[in-house]
Length: 96
Length: 131
Length: 117
Image (cartoon, rainbow over all chains, first blue to last red; front, top):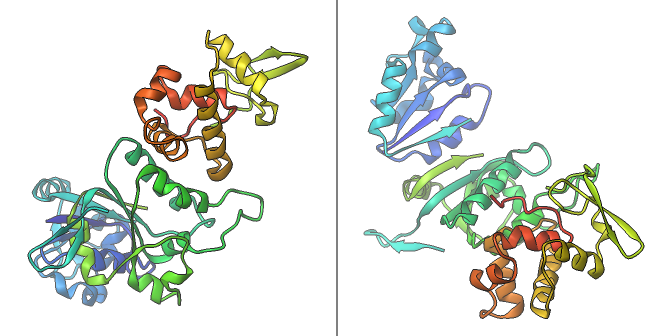
């Protein structure tokens, strides 16, 4: 299982498509930095195939005032959760 | 190229490092930095694969030259990859098609990878770096 | 990479050849076989036919790829140009001890190899 990290907003960059195209059926996606904009309900349709495998970083959501505005499908993790996700993965791949 | 047969009979490329190149020559230093990383890894004896994806396919285009102010392009490095035993050159099929290009337009023979094969490709490399 | 900083001058015949702090030519155009011999003499080395053929391989490599090769591609280039028997790191280590890619590039008048650590 690979942990994919996305730090670009899906609304302004095609990076999300690259990341999604490279993801295997067990891989997880963690939205960080501007990537957390993907956790907005309006972007949810992008990630429908990732039930249970989509995560967003709490600190980056909070900083942007998005913590209470997240789609339900995004699992919110803090930095410790980030570490745990990294430990559980064989490797991480960053998309930026 | 390092290929192994997997259970489905599909051919899969494996290696120590997969470098994904997503930026075109001249516009930024991303491509050059990705290629440099690949060369350093190969110089240390790592088995390196390159995946040209998105605008990165432009790196392989025939007929490139130095930039307007005489900056070196990256085509010299592409030409040199074989000297570093980097022979696994993969191109994302969609990246070619969406730019109206075919393998005939490219400097070197490459393997075209369909989108569905990408996850397996990442899985088969110990380390994956994006540029 | 080539440094443009002039650290010292090496007298070669009637020429004063500018060298950078690591002993590489500041201006590649200054290179001549006599310069290579003078650089080698500084290291207490006398260039033999076996040195010269590798120096030529290095210069051809630079001509084509515009960078000086690290060890691995140098071994490969020598093997392709001079035969498998000579395309061995042992052979190059004997000719250019310590760091063949670096020592060889210096004598061939090339910049310091980029991916050479």
